[in-house]
Amino acid sequence: MMQILNTLSNKKERLTPRRAKRIQLFVCGPTVYDYAHIGHARTYLAFDFIAKYLNKLGYKTYYLQNITDIDDRIITRAKEMGIHTKELARNFEKAYHEDERKLRITSISKYARATDYIPTIIRQVKLLLKKKHAYKIENDGYYFDLSTFPRYGVLSKRTSLQAEDSVSRIDESKGKRNKGDFALWKFSKPSEPYWNTELGKGRPGWHIEDTAITESIFGPQYDIHGGAVDLIFPHHEAEITQQESLSNKKPLAKYWLHTGFLTINGEKMSKSLGNFITIRSFLEQHETPTLPFDATTLLRYMVLSQHYRTRVDFTGTLVTQAKQALITLFDFEKRLTMYATRTLKLKPGEDHKKQKLNNKYILQFHKALQNDFSTPQALAIIFEVIHTINTKMDKQKATIHDIVNTRALLALLYELFGLRFRTVQIPKEVKKIVTEREEARKLKNWQRADELRDKAKALGFSIEDTQKGPIIHSLYH
Ligand code: AMP
Image (cartoon, rainbow, N blue to C red; front, side, top):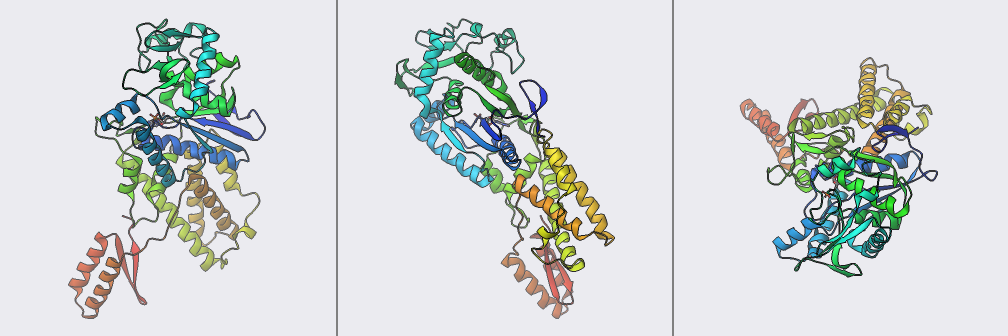
């Protein structure tokens, strides 16, 4: 039974989608004015996992993501670069998709660009005006009148007074009826991009693109809305306000899931602090040929080893811990294979015949994940199993079922977490060093042989001298 913590009720609830076995999931996508950073990766990898896990449970998840391709940040950046906003947005949208491919984010069913939904946005604003939820401020735009929506604050648990007090990220305008009123449509200033519409020359406010998109694709209500915790207020609160005022149906989304923010060494990531790490720079920097996994696996593991709701503090220690855990997994799997073939004489491909239907490890793993997608709990079970089986293998007491069930558990982990392992290729340079060392050894030049061993070590490889000749091992540096 899948239980999820719903921000709306602040309780763990049993997942019961509106239509049996189908889930409509909407997650706020990126504002495409720059390269995506590892904070985005934290949120999008968490939702990729969530969608994949729901599918694994037998649901058909339709995962919708918007692309914000018009907003103030896009306008400012395009001006700085002297290019059209559309050109800037398309370039960074393309880069975002490239990053997603590299991260193996494959669960998104549809992307919807804000600018492709202008007619629906106009229709929604007109209806809000007609229903007296919205008003016009001359030379400024159209605003939502918060005094017409008593449920305001239902998600963020703020009263409208508290909302009024909080001026952060709220549209500024002198003519507003209530301090917290937010823009639905902004008239464009000269030199700003605009759409010439019945509402006048302008562009959409921040929140209306999402309700226009979700209403077009899902209708006025759907199952799950996600995003990071920073969006609860005012963004998600405003979406509820708009859509529930339009349709008179509540709730807009039955479940609200929020990911914790990623910080860098305890600080918010920002360009001005010089701690801004893009996904592509992370992947480039951490791609290490001597490791038995790629940088994507490292990032996926780092993110998924934390519960999606907790804050992730990106530090050197977190990277090291993730590397060590992945090496443990890789070494353990190697040991399992050796034990299976050498001790148990299990032939390759025989696994599925030997797996017990009631694989208790897998049942425990699912139980953890069904507790609000608790990936840390699920990983704790994996490491417990590793410990148990290692002890059994030490005593030569691991059975075929132990091995096969453990392998099935690991396969499930790799599939759901998107982890990939590889055989470390020995670089030509290292092979040359080993040959040279063999020659030095033949000449009994031990000093040279030791020097060459150190050289190989510095490159991340150790040399084991056996009767059959030298064996090269990766030191996983
Ligand atoms: P933005 O590009 O700022 O519109 O954000 C796109 C999505 O990424 C939203 O769901 C944000 O809440 C999320 N996000 C942005 N920065 C971070 C961060 N540092 N940590 C986690 N999620 C983030």
